View 1 (cartoon, rainbow, N blue to C red):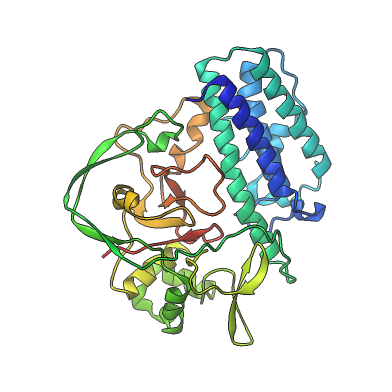
View 2: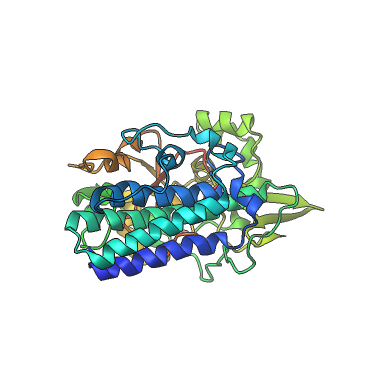
Amino acid sequence: MLSQSELLHLFKETRKDSENICSFLETEDYVVQPIVDVSPPKWHLGHTTWFFEEFVLKKYAEDHTLFDENTAFVFNSYYESVGKKVVRTDRGNLSRPTVAWIYKFREYVTTEIIRLLENNTLSKEALGVLEIGCHHEKQHQELLYADIKYILGNNPLMPEYNQQFEENPVQDFEREWVDVAEGIYEIGHTSEDFCYDNELGVHKIYLHDFSISNKLVTNSEYMEFVEAGGYDDVLLWHAEAWDWVNTNEIKTPFYWHKIENIWHQYTLGGLKPLNPDAPVTHISYYEAFAYAQWKGMRLPTEQEWEISQKDFDWGSRWEWTESSYSPYPNYQKADGALGEYNGKFMVNQKVLRGASVATSSKHSRYTYRNFFHPQLRWQFTGFRLVK
């Protein structure tokens, strides 16, 4: 665990980073919610602030005065034990509180947390919750990038967000296959550094021998699947995935556009020609699985990924695995509302490993277990193959 002074620095840095992400937005951009999976940027700013007030200031700061009695109702997300909340689908209907009000709310809570850290010696428990709060906000920073891209990328004008954001780094090396021998291995978080509860419980696993690609699947490689009619071949898809493809008329990865017979991709820097050498992104698990079937290969399990990750570069895409999101042996969720953070989502989701170009600094590690429903692809998701 970080020291109190280190946490103070992390907190200040984290709060500033969220506001830097939003500094490229116009006021109108803060309010939009095109689909249920995308939250308005101003809601992210308010929710991460409410988290610190609800779980840190209310519990550990003497005589704390709430900024507003309605913040929990407006900015609670899924913490059912905390109280009533605005339904997720209605976040985009909240013209009030205003963006200006939310920044005042942020300033108030940020100031109070800094005062708490500078003038008190906090317990290990309090520091632990504060550290969770910082990483919780870092998670929402990544969601901000994905949600902003969805908001702007589904605007008919496809405006740019920021030309400096590089989302398509090329893996400029030859593809090789990393061989891993059959045997018993250990996985799970082992260091004293921060991790979430779903990473804990170091345990042994047995793996058969396998070979994993040192490179992610690229746009040009995935294009071959598209042009070969992969989206029309029922034999490549799970039954549920086939229904998803046809119901939603899916024919390409998200944000691909064919303009005058040339493929383009909407990026946070605006609409650009598709870079064939960049790793494919905004792919659902369904699509990753179908492509692997087409190649006569498969996706790695999360255990295979963790054991072999030291032998390849990772971090530009969240990588789909074949593993369902479930608890490690002897998993114990936290007491109280924070116990709702991970444990209750361990059903009907797939694990993703690694990190992405949108992952905040000091927030990635090889034991990190991200998870999404298999049809989702608004995040910076990609995949590598195993044979």
